[in-house]
Image (tube, rainbow, N blue to C red):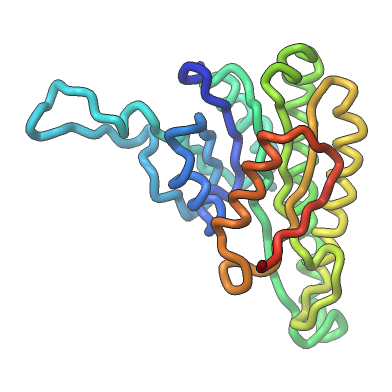
Length: 241
């Protein structure tokens, strides 16, 4: 179950740049279900146990605040359900879903240069749109729809990590990626409209390129502000000051 009054966060893409930053900054503040593929976040997990050599029987803080690591290809059949099963078995519920996992495949020569853009369409949409849809729907079906009072009391919500590419045209062959992020933006608005019936909010952050143009910490702060706020149905740009 959850550690005291900590919020439970299910975070996808936990081994990426933003996911790793989230885990490193917040693993003592949230109970984090860190879902990742080949890369893992640089934070203590359930696979590690720390011992103070000068006090072997003493309490080590890292053992009290370990992320719950799940390796998964979320686009594979049955994997979303497996992740939800493990998260609910471990913590009993989820307060914050951060859909951060994404596929970015560029086609600098354009969408008509061979079939690469066409071949990448389904895989990118599967991860960038399909996985957030499935995770959101399953969490609602498995718990949120049946706990309206708890949803409001714990301010449960979804934050989708989108991109400025979802609302702007940039060079570099971003057509398929940008289309997937535009779809994610509109999915966010529909989630907000439908999930309002049982007290769950949904928003998206749409950052500029990070860390090249926007500090990763600024994107992280935007997610935290959405988690602690009351807004819903918004897609919030994160740009350099």
